[in-house]
Image (tube, rainbow, N blue to C red; front, side, top):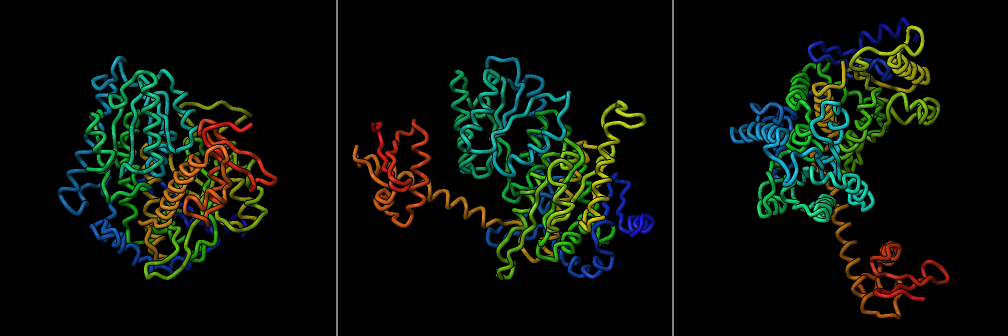
Length: 533
């Protein structure tokens, strides 16, 4: 197409919603409106299914669970007055608690006030709050955010060691629905030990966000945490950012959580439209379906042209891939559905992987995020008549053009700025699009058997390690090989796992396991409790 034809196509394929300040451009996705129209009947079913969800239909029959993250920004739509009241009460409590922390009514023993917030969580309990914290941080922040989002000892040391003496002024927010998630539990225990090493009582610096009656809830009650906030079984981790999980850390940081909720609510309303051409989430889901041939044949590369949205691709990785990556459809047939997500940021991507996007394997489509507002205040001219923001936008437009010339599909989301309201809109948009797309490919977006399988496998490995170490202690100075220890642990077929466990234990001298090398790595012997010469 020549530029004039592309201009006409842009006008025909653009969704422009002035009330939101939002645009969705599908003109470079390589299909026409006919492809969307052909899918409208199945889209009607998807929209009806989402409407049923909002009215309280069971989204996960095997768990007897509703899915209601949409109610978090529209409590009046909740299926019961009790749920609506719980949402409103929790939001009010979040704002009140943050206010009392900021003015010193809730303060640490021996310090004037809390100046840092340490969020301990994993997956959606960390990715959402991290995205909000990074995207909306600024000079007006009331508290500085920090995150423990893994069980890597070195990573834990870096965060806790970086806080050092500031732990005395740090409020720890522990987030775990069950209270038994190993990574979060480990992070909490490591944090508590760090507080204790500075002579600080952890409970007087801690709040919990968890399900009522969970192990964490019981611990928080027993130890006298400063406060507790609810997680409900109808909110999944990857869609929890507009619950207390995301709102409490954001409010403590000083972010306008009311605007975040308002932006999400406005996008929710726009994406309830039964008219596909006026529904941005429906158009996104349809575009994914067309370009990926209904089976996720192309990955989604997320390229926001704004530093503040660097973590957006990480956030979307969990939201999309955990929701869409399923072995079976709703009828139990093996389908192996998925939608791979990765990304960087513009224009860093110009110097990273755009070369492959333009000239390499055509196994992707790009989702650009364009932000119109450059910065607060005037910009310096780095060349006559051109600012840094002009260069950034020029690089976006140039990359979009170069990809189109190579036959590589892309779409563009345009927002006015990176504000709490705009970020809320983006979060709600992709939550809706994921739910609709899942219906289009007949899978359940709201359960994750693969994640549970991984947790069970990890529990098996840890139990095996305990047995191996116990057996090793019984061997004395003679030691044993990985083959012998696997057999002694009652798992002779798990020799490879035992080998890997022993190698790591021996690499950490404080674990008391010593390795005596053999002719090959597999002939080594191991002892416990002494160092062999």
